[in-house]
Amino acid sequence: MTQLEELLAGWIPRQRWFAGKGIPIEKVVVEAEHSVVPGEPGMRVLVVDVGQRGSISRYQVLLGSRPPGTLREELTHAAIGVCELPGHGTACTVYDAAHDPELTGLLLERIAVGAVSGSVRFHRLPGTAIRTGLRSLVLTGEQSNTSLVYGEDYVLKTFRRLWPGRNPDLELTSALSGCPFVARPHGWIEADLTDDGQAVPTTLAMLQQYLRSATDGWALAAISVRDLYAAPDIAPGEAGGDFAGEAERLGAATASVHRALARELPTDVLTPRGLRELAGSMLDRLRLAISEVPELAPYAGALRTAYEAFARVEEPLPVQRVHGDYHLGQVVRTDSGWVLLDFEGEPAAPVGERQRPSSPLRDVAGMLRSFDYAARHQLIGKACEKSLAPVARAWARRNREAFCLGYAFGGGVNPEKYQTVLRAFEYDKAVYEVMYEARNRPSWLRIPLESIAALAGAAP
Ligand SMILES: Nc1ncnc2c1ncn2[C@@H]1O[C@H](COP(=O)(O)OP(=O)(O)O)[C@@H](O)[C@H]1O
Ligand SMILES: [Mg+2]
Image 1 (cartoon, rainbow, N blue to C red):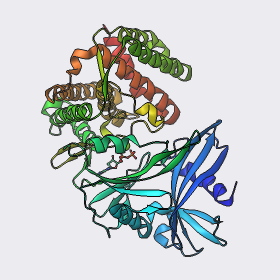
Image 2 (tube, protein in one colour):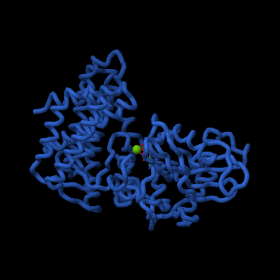
Image 3 (cartoon, rainbow, N blue to C red):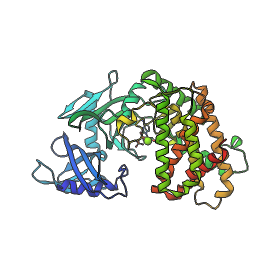
Image 4 (cartoon, rainbow, N blue to C red):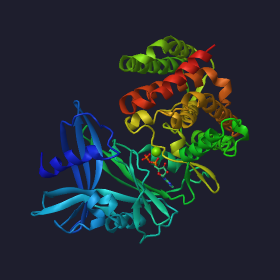
């Protein structure tokens, strides 16, 4: 490994966006290095291959470089180390350039003019004018990616995990441009990534409108739940912080986005064979989950029955492009209503897989599971957990019903009429959550397990 790769091997696992936490790193290789800002301070886009358990994941690092000892104090938290960079001759301090507004400002300028910096291409969407000279700040809600806010105008989302191809977030957000429930896209940055010896244009970052008045859906739901727990004798509908109106509007916004996606992008109908294959992949996930989490075994029968019923559904199941990773943390409430964000899908899956049409009811199921989490997570480990459990269930049920009603009003299918399909998707999501919680957050494992128990208990 080069000096830089050694430094990255120590730094990458500590980053929030690194998906392979807890698994030993076998190797780190800088696969490609694109100089974007030459000189000092300099900026390079690195494509870094991280090898774990015999497989490789690719990550993007925006690497800033400055002469040693010249990193300003406010950037020291972003430091990666000191090393010699290829073609540089002398040692320099390298750091995460996403935190350096002096460098990130140049990214905005380049998008504004549609520049080409070596092999990195900057694009501005036709019909948009971009204001430059704005300072950027890294958004603190960082999860799988790193988003920079420029002034109060734009968000530049830099994708951390890279897969060859156009990122579905850019693809879907562009297809939905003009939809009131989506933040307007303004441009993107791309470079070629090698895939099977072919150079594939790959999205590195996407620029979109910053929603100034946005409040996170998860945070809003959590406030409503907290209000209710403070006065548990009041029915959810009468509580001051009732969320049902919001849930209904969110359902309508979701349906509207689904309809727009079906208009703009290919749709299909799942063949009986496709349906069986989908049910088969749910069964595979269940098997894997049971092998990791034996507490799931008592419900295996009910889950299998639900998946088998799903495989036998006779009415045609329409499929289309969907959000793919839909939950309360992916929607924000603005002054003018709900806005859906982050159409990237599941970042751990290859782009080709995420582009496959799916049932919009999968997104509905994702949001319904999120209501369950919102209702339950504040009770974990609290003395009042048992006594408040019925209140949590009432909150989740009320908002679930409101969301489904809004979804049907908004022109989506009525989820209540597709119980077999919806139930299979909800189970499948909960099984995924069981594995996720067992691996990452064992104290929360009860949330999906108890939901599965409740769903299984209510099964016809
Ligand atoms: N255009 C935007 N306007 C306002 N806030 C945003 C915008 N885009 C993202 N955010 C905030 O940043 C968070 C993370 O963004 P998201 O696109 O979901 O990235 P990730 O892939 O890291 O989850 C969102 O939950 C939201 O709070
Ligand atoms: Mg997100």
